[in-house]
Image (cartoon, rainbow over all chains, first blue to last red; front, side, top):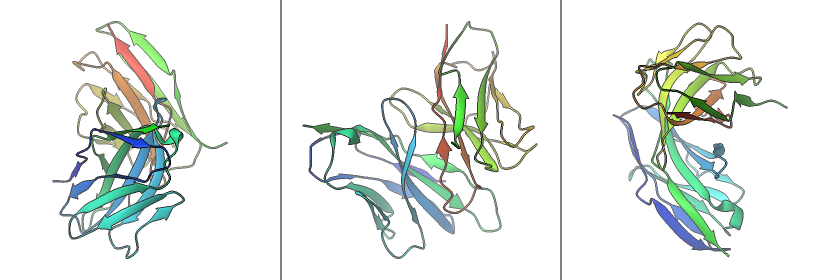
Length: 118
Length: 114
């Protein structure tokens, strides 16, 4: 069965520091994709970054990067130079694809609440 | 602008009543999804649809029903059979259901049943 684990329910970080949000996953699928989403207090879900299981390089999007370690089944999100506006819930998610199946769905972890201190 | 709309943002109902949450997208996406989020928790998949007139149950479909008569619309009905319907409901869409297709989310509907 697929599973996403986020072990940090909450984190406090000083503004301008870098922060790493942990995510580990479990899957037996042939190929899969890993996503990170941000959820501000307004409730909307904002897509941040994607990493495919066969991508050789770690994904980067501006201040966001994904530290992908396939053998350890981890996909940690790194936010460089944190800002006050980064305070939000962050969710790690995975989509898998079984061989011969065209259908796949995204499953989400329980989230990490990040708070940035001024 | 393209996007996903959910209305209303807040919805209040009496216990025992069915209620339908709307979700409309103008992104021309084939796949649409409904999630439920309880306080302090992640998202759980209720139903998803890959194409018009087709949908599959997610992990917590009991007490919910959906329809997909049009590509743009994927309404969710919370029936009286749903034992604990008070929650935040998020609708999402994606180009397809495979690969790197990220999901785009609507603003959500907060349902309170008393």
